[in-house]
Length: 106
Image (cartoon, rainbow, N blue to C red; front, top):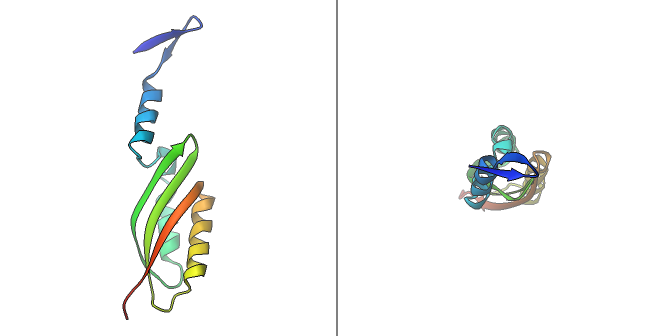
């Protein structure tokens, strides 16, 4: 599909693909290589047992949002883990991150 814009053809297929990805809340291609490293760094934090249900998507162009669940030790410092987790994902370009922390049973 081509349109003529100011006398030059313009291919809209890439725009449609990007728009569909945003509407479907797919993981942005620009994050696919950095997210596994972020998951690994979070799972190495003291007190974190495991990371579950990560979901990252684009709110609008270059604004990324994510959610995830962390299972942590009963005596873990939840505020420190939350702060470190936010720092890790902020470095990867995530603007908003929602983290659910669940303490494991003893």
